[in-house]
Length: 164
Image 1 (cartoon, helix red, strand yellow):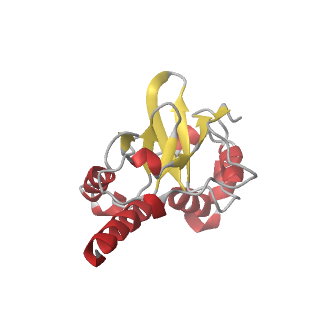
Image 2: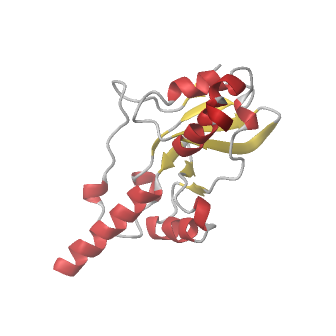
Image 3: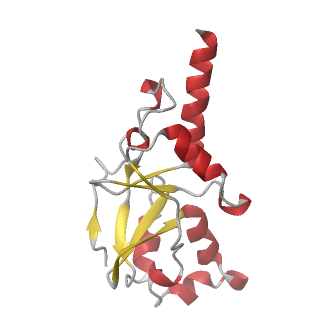
């Protein structure tokens, strides 16, 4: 079961980001982040899989009731990989398993006040296989930001600065 939804999507869609208003690479990452669905680690995986039916969901956050400070993430890429599974039996194998068994318990998590340029630096410092994994943004509301969105925002800043 879903334990809580933090800042739900408006009208079934995520709110649009403010990339066009970013003119400084030191803008807080919280300006680009979007709300993320949060589930408990004991939630059965089919419930989480249903959340990914929406194209607007890039990740689902997972919290562990046994360890309140422990936060994980299931990205769309991870969901696709575990759903396919060995020989295509992934969904059948996950039908009765809790999401806590497939979650990435070590995501990059940053405060919403951290500068976009610093978050990109941290993301690019990760191992190559995890470099483009979504970033959890914590604050009063749990949020997520994709690395491509961050890079696009920085490219926009550089482009505007170069043209000026």
